Structures are given as C-alpha cells and as structure tokens.
Image 1 (tube, rainbow, N blue to C red):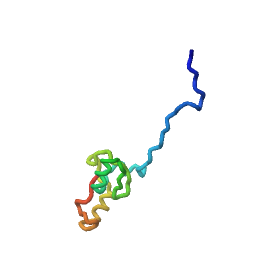
Image 2 (tube, rainbow, N blue to C red):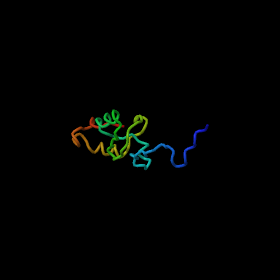
Image 3 (cartoon, one colour):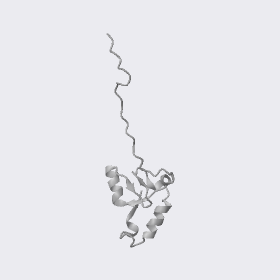
Image 4 (tube, one colour):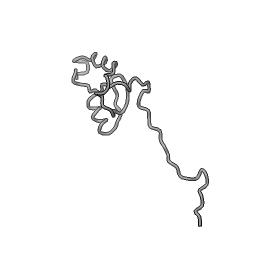
Length: 96
C-alpha cells in the first residue's frame, strides 16, 4: 500500500520573511568604524537593536571596530562637538 502524493500547490512550505535593510547600502559606510553613544552600543549588544552613528548610518554592530579606520564624517562631527557640544566632551562617544 502506498501513501498518496500531495497535489501540487497544496503541500507545506517555508515562509521566508525578508530581513530589513538597515544599512544605507552605498558601501562606504561598511569600510569604517563609526562613533555611536556608548549606552546605545551596550543596548545593541544586549538586545540586538540597531544603532545610529553620528554620520547617520543605521546598523546592528557585529564586528571589531579596531580593525577599521574611523569614518571621516563621524570624526568631523565628533571633533566639531568639542568639549561643550553635547555636554559629553571627548569622553562621550564610543567607536563601533
């Protein structure tokens, strides 16, 4: 006795939901380490939420920032903030 074959189109399948694109996709941001608020980096590490760099890049950090040069736009914004720019000075931001 054989098991009947299911009809085409009535079988089970796997639903694949697209992963949201959190990177700007222009490629240049992927070559740099970016400045992000330290508390945001910790939150991202704990729950996987995306972070926003000073330059505007949005992504979920997952690589060692020490292996990449600092984003020129982040660096320029960070340096323009100076000691009183946001009340945090040089110690306020983190590199990720």
